[in-house]
Amino acid sequence: MPSGERTSARHRPWMAVTRLLGVVVVLALVVRFWDRVAGAWSLLAGASLAAWSVAASLQLASLFVATMRFSAILRALGHRTSLVALLGDIVASTGINAALLMGVGEVYRAQRIAPIVGSAATSGAVVVLDRVIGVATIFATAAVASLWIATPSAMRIGWRRPAMVVALVLIASLAVFFGRRRAFAGAMARPLLALWERPRELTVAVIASLGSVGLWLAGIVVLARGLGLGVQPGAIVFAAPLVTLATLLPVSVGGVGVREAGYVILLAPHGVAAPGAIALGLAQYSLFFPIIAAGAAILLRRGVWPTRS
Image 1: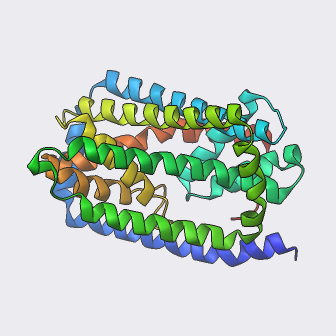
Image 2: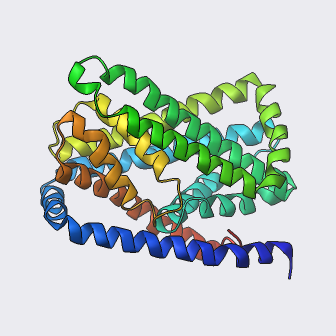
């Protein structure tokens, strides 16, 4: 059996267990806090349709701008490919991650660009670098937003401990991620150095990363307004990145449960009741449904699936 197949066989049972445990925990929490979940559904039912439409459009725009970041990394390595094809890859991988677990979509993207860059290790390193830039932008956004919301004394309470926990979780997640991909770690130096030596591509990658995160956060702010939560944008801009970083852990399907619990913890100091925080998490995840459908259509048309995890 090839090494890739052995890796897949070794990781599948572990991934199945984490999925199962995540579903069990989410179901247990739904039963335990059914009144709050029911309140969240009531808020979702009354949400503005215009807010849903605008938020979904901003989400798609965010993916397109993220495609420009990925393209800049490839150009730094001397490779060019169609933005449309790359957008299809990112839509498909995002749909895979939302429907399954974070990381599976990255494997798909690495397989797609391997023929372009000529090496599986290099393609994996490019995907990892793109992910790292995105995660770093999200984390930096949360750090800046913490300054934004930390002025009133009532808003200085309740976020530091969750932020520290999420930071530790992120560090542990990246350690596991890179530990499994030791072959990528050495190869990652090449795209990173190439990007650093080409200021134009580096500038495009940074601006595109900021733009992608900005559009994504704008969509969540619009959702919060559409749900009538009445929370200031700074609180959302702070909470959403940390919640998203927490969903990188492979402990649930598509981050369901982790996302909602994160909003309950981080938005409580800003006067958002649990039903509203849960509704925001569910609404945010619902934005992935069109992307999951589009990603599935792309995968079916291409007939290409991730072969290992």
